Amino acid sequence: MRVIITGASSGIGTALARYYLHAGVTLGLIARRIEPLRQLAETAAGRVETYAADVRDTAAMQTAAAHFIARHGSPDIVIANAGISVGTMTQIAEDIAAFQDVMDTNVVGMVKTFQPFLGAMRDARRGALVGIASVAGYRGLPGAAAYSASKAAAISYLESLRVELSGSGLRVVTICPGYIETPMTVKNPYPMPFIMSADMAARKIAAIIESGNSFAVTPWQMAVVARLLRIVPNWLFDLALRGAPHKPRRGE
Image (cartoon, rainbow, N blue to C red; front, top):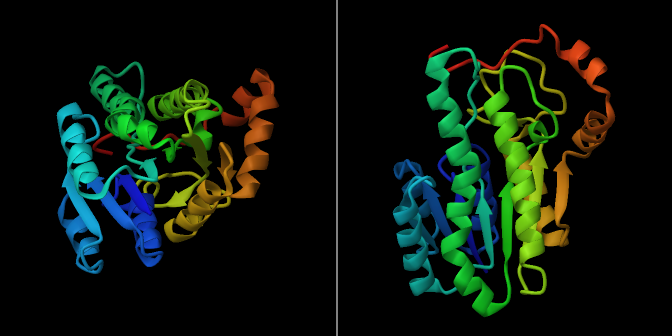
């Protein structure tokens, strides 16, 4: 089996890489920081290709995909995991750049991850395109407007792609994790219910992909919370989150 993972240098991406390495698959690992990828590759006896690429960079992603396909063929699974999260406030002009970075990475970066693999995967008429979204995409969280908006957009994008590829032999899988112990969450100044380790999250994500489901929230407790978030009226949602701590902005 051949698996591509973006954002593989830390957090869920690294945990997924370790999981699939133990399963004996061939990996294509993509991240901006190459050294952590090389450290993973050292343990893999030639089964890992590493690429220093930013998912926002179209040319870099196309080059990485072309190299992997030429050496190993069409991937069986492409996991668009790369993502960033930072607190943002609309009234602060300096945060506009942060909004742009979050949307470009978490949404457009997902498109740029899938696009260069799609031709080969459609020719092979098999494979799964997996997008890591978030429960944060269900409702807009105060102080995290960019992140919530990006994950809501990712959920809708993946649904559109799933329908577009119906009958092609390809699957599209949307996964919405809750809180995961990663560098992205370590500075959060608020409670994080049902938080999981990155390794536990990786096992659950891999199981979801294997199950054939097209959409899943993990862990199951967050699935319950997500359903409640969908139906809570605005006045109650606003009241519950009024005055809630905000995710730190850049530099905080």
